[in-house]
Figure 1 (tube, rainbow, N blue to C red):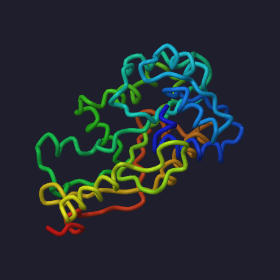
Figure 2: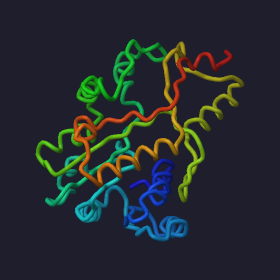
Figure 3: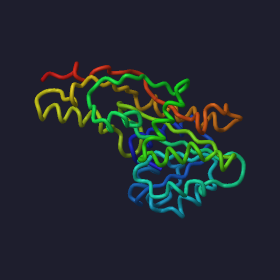
Figure 4: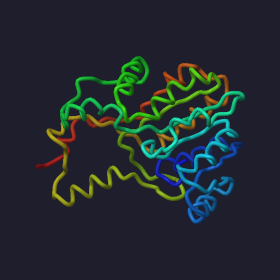
Length: 254
């Protein structure tokens, strides 16, 4: 899912360049959008539908070796049915794009916007701490289900990739830019200065979209073989970042 979006479209480009023997079926909302996608990526097979097309998604997911879910998790209407999407054969893989606000739960709950965080999280030795945050967040429905899916379906591998501030021109067929930096720039022009929330001392990581999708490709290649179990399921949490802004306030002129 999500091939007409910013991340999903760039991932589609990266996959077709790196995994040339792959057969790709993409969920696309309309025939018009499908025509745009297949014009640029003629080997993609469109599946016309949306995130409510549960029967179609389930049927195709059971045929697939790897499912890439790159649409917004908050809009999923089928999280409790995820387990039924996998066939009882071989190894099935589900790679999910997670919400970039996963670590902001405690700050949102305490309304301490713009304050520097007291903790730096790491997706390797600190995976259990991230899992604790996910557990405490009722909105992380898909994250909850994916990390526990392997316990009831041992043939399933899952991974969630979390993106921060994502920049750079995408290489997909439709949406080729992020809404993050353009919207920040638009707000800065509107108010005649850079903006931040509260004291603006919170940190924000960033990554180029092509680096993010390169990580997705690496996971696909890992999934194709006898992969390291530490990459999947409860350990399958990946923070994609290549830089860090320690204080948004330093970029703003009040």
